[in-house]
Length: 404
Image (cartoon, rainbow, N blue to C red; front, side, top):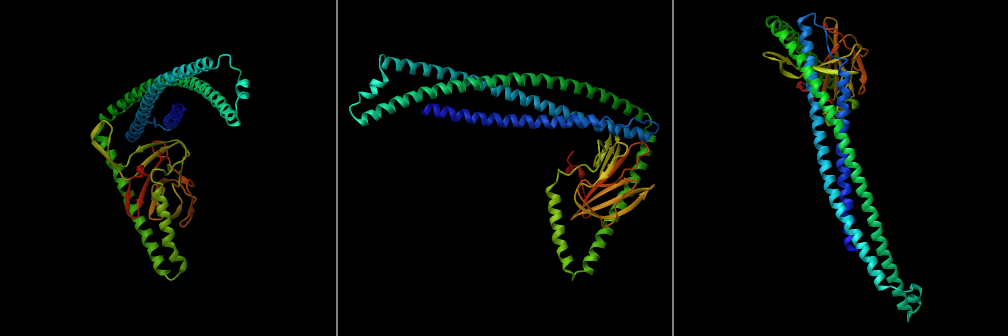
């Protein structure tokens, strides 16, 4: 009986591992499905206008961004196939082990049955019980018959359990093989799409290289506008911080203002705990066409762009939305009729630029996902939101905070 108990424990443990592995595959499957959905949505976002050099740069940025997403999807698919292979190998080993245990159980059951027949050939169980010389002997004989019958039943149950488990594992192996074939097809299709996008990127790069001087001038002008915008954002943040500090000093005797720092601290901690989980600050499908920091224009090492935030391209009619609960601390004009909005989240400040309008006012409270305003359409014909994130006056990399 001890051997059977150990076998059941091992079986339960193997089922636990199987559940964990399946959970891992399911998670990877969900992540891949989300990537595929995002790439499908990005098809609507890609810029195709080629009337100006700036639009070709935007188109190149969009295609390059798509290439990154496609590469991520391919890597996710490759990891998922590897996980399926590992799960298949583990199940194959488990089937081999279970098959040995199954045969051993059948042999043990057959031996037990043969032993019982040899020992009790011609024995009438009722006569055996009633021929007991005392009640104690009667009780022992009854327990003997019960325990032996129970042992045979346990062996029979274990045989059925092993058989069912073997069948389940074989079905699972067949399912994994089918799933792998589907994934291999998906990978091949994505590799083909990647090569097509790489060719498209190369054509755009070749066109831009032929106009390198004009390109550098265009990027320099764009960088100048970006630097001016960043200076204005910094100025607005300093003004907002100074204004808040003055209010606190003026109302320092008010109990309400004494509670404010505690509230700010709570909001700050809550914001920090959501690092990497904040929603994208734009509605609908999106494509990140400008990464944070100094970036080379694809295919041209000597042509660089310095972005102090993220440029997020959306569909026509896209709106900016709040990434977290907070208070509007500033609304400012950034030129060419564009509007910028600063939202305070305790010690953190999120900045939304290139808006054509906003329905908010300074001091208004917002919740995560609330609409801030419509994003103005750029000269390329697409709405592009410029988004920055600060902790007081320190600029942060938004990519580390947003859930993409």
